[in-house]
Image (tube, rainbow, N blue to C red; front, side, top):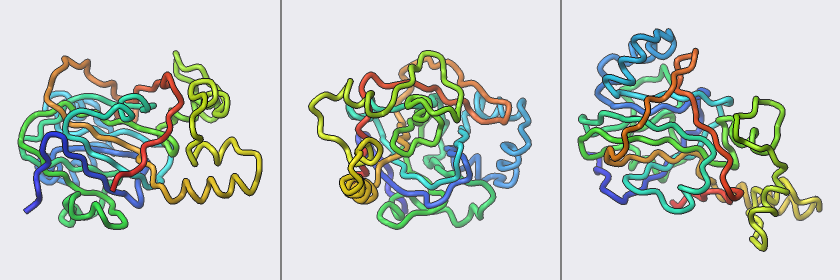
Length: 258
């Protein structure tokens, strides 16, 4: 039987492939009719989506601009200081997890019957989707995205890429300038060194170090419902729209703890 998360617990796992999305949902809602659940997202039936998200509080699905795999951390309770300070994109709403199990995934269409417990795969090379056992309840759920491998478009907006439109309130800035302005006399993290180091040998060392560190890409926080949150906005494709921001100080990157 899967071990239930308790207040203060953290668990981390890897999705080795994703389908340009990340979604979370109540396992009983998803498993009741998995094909129907997939079609609910694919068909973009706005009325049915609104009911499932806002009335049933059954799932949230967010788009990503690439299908790369990613590292996920689930937090039961409060975020730590770095998790609070360094996020660049987020979604917040509610999930009814009265069934006691939250599915986390980046794909649709695979065999739901083979879904694994997150704790069982935490030390493995990864999976396509898994579930997390939690005390049965309705929760405030927050999904946060972090650099370096942010795939929500947020980081590219912050560093001034012309690939994506810039969100109002974000002032683009080259990474080197952003880091040096906001982190004076700070040791250069390997992933930033890869980008700003001019010496090719030193840049190679940074790259090798960064590759070995396994930075966390997403933090999913579950907490008691303490805020009267405004409903998230649904995009034309049926996904929940990300809220973007530029942190006051340049993120240093969350390093996987397990």
